[in-house]
Length: 128
Image (cartoon, rainbow, N blue to C red; front, side):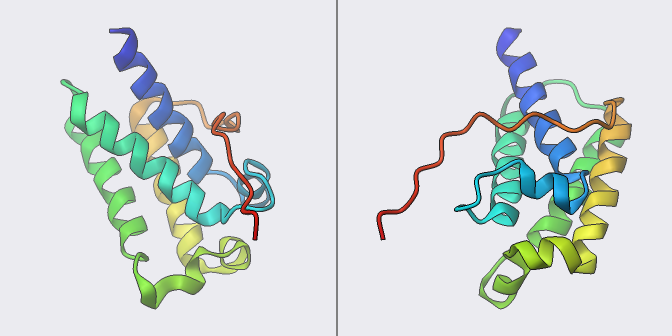
């Protein structure tokens, strides 16, 4: 039961991070990482852990999560490399769509729209 709560909290944190303004999103990560990519990676990791173990999920929650996931995945791949930059995070209209979808997902789960704490992940700066 405690593990399920942790998984739900990780998913909540990742969704709430995606729902924030670009300035807040950028503040959640160290300057030397690709922040847009980290937002998506945090969400995908939390989603994978959640769907792998969650036993009960309301249909409207599942629909919102899937919509958010599909929107993020639509920008994956080499053709979209420019999407995963700080500048794109601030200005690309799809990031606004992601924020709206994340807010809708948070609402579906009954989560309060607030700024999440940083993930607590450890980031290691490249030696190059």
